[in-house]
Image 1 (tube, rainbow, N blue to C red):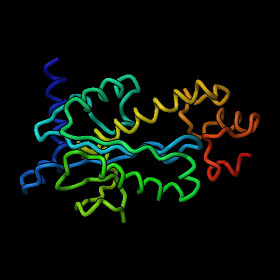
Image 2: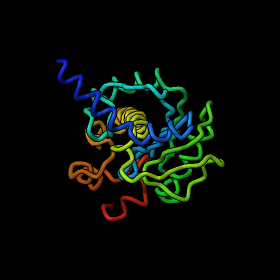
Image 3: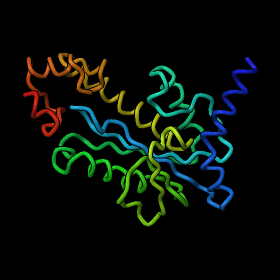
Image 4: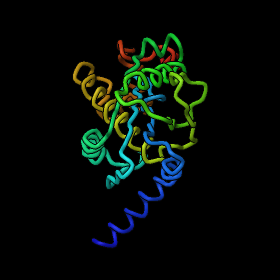
Length: 211
């Protein structure tokens, strides 16, 4: 047990390496921002931002894709409880169709920054550039959710929020199987799309090849 704990502390310390250097440079509040749902054929894109305390070491925090659904749900509560400040933006499929997914994601980032009660000194964002962060400096980190603790925490908040939304939509449109694939273009989802046609939460710009 101790060995596992030791390994986990080491992993989290490595995940916080970039932030530690930034804290040492005098940045007090660092906000990590990430999104969930850029690729699916249906539903919104969800963007989350979190400012975690400097000494935060939540066991299991990682890129949301590397964490099981059950574990993400548990971590979600712990992250929000511990966060100095957090903010979530949900950008619906209509906006995605209107301005494209990249611009919809960027719009979400701006909304997240506006929604933070504590203003960060620096924003770390996963692989986005040319964004409006309301004058707050930002660094774009490629694969940031696997390299930065705050971005990893944000990725979990975004993913859990979006999964919950898609589970609710599954109640309304059970024929598509949203509960299983969360709107991503699996073979079963595409088959259902061809058989039933699209529903109101499908992204028209994403499904042209299938219907």
